[in-house]
Amino acid sequence: MKLTIAMPKGRIFEEAVELLRAAGYQLPPEFDDSRKLIIDVPEENMRFILAKPMDVATYVEHGVADLGIAGKDVMLEEERDVYEVLDLKISRCHLAVAGLPNAKAVSVAPKVATKYPNVASKYFREQGEQVEIIKLNGSIELAPLIGLAERIVDIVSTGRTLKENGLVELARIQDITSRLIVNPVSYRTKDQFIDDMVERLSAVIGES
Image (cartoon, rainbow, N blue to C red):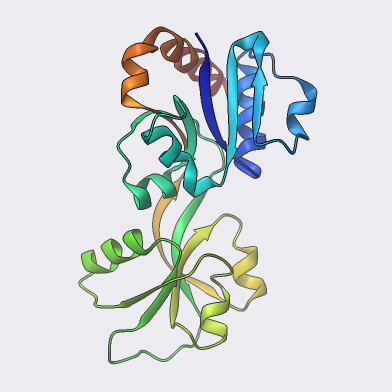
């Protein structure tokens, strides 16, 4: 029985491949440099779909992938109908509110730019603060610099990008790591294979 796994491109992909190899999965060397979007690994009875991070949970929810590796930020934003079965403890970062250090407070609802509108809305609602959310897809740090927004909500890993753009972190929202997620139907039909993977990965994570 073949397992199809959706993986995000980029840093999470590299760390996840390392984790799978440490768990004893034989992934070919060319796996790392492949530009293909679908990679078959017949030795392990696996197929990998390489996707944009925000799309991984969608593929798993709709059953085109049995499993996926997704950041907790995506899970919070997308609220997909999938099972989160394991914290892989890779790609550590956090969601934060940031802005210019000496920005004047705005009396009306301040504008907040983010690619996480649901997460940002929920956070400011919990703070009892009324804001206007502006959704952007990239280069969020630009927003305060060009006057589009007073604040941003974005992922911070080292804080270097904020610093280089003259921004400071104003509040920490939540710590983020990557999770192994499963399609609910696959979890019933391929439970043995999925449980085996969870067990093998858990052993490796426990040692690190």
